[in-house]
Length: 68
Image (tube, rainbow, N blue to C red; front, side, top):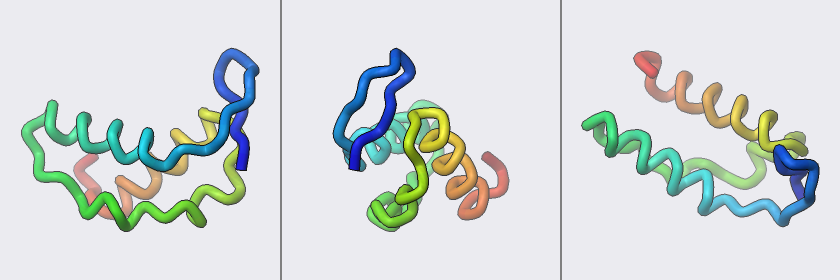
């Protein structure tokens, strides 16, 4: 699956980029990390832009940790 980056270019979807960003955000805020492997690629099937993926990640995180 390809996504549209903010600069308009296309890139292959890379779940590890999302996992790394979530891990770093939790670590920077002295919080224990969620079970990151639960982020399944299928959750992002209808996301085509970086902004849509970002919104989806926030929704998932808020569902799992309402204090986010």
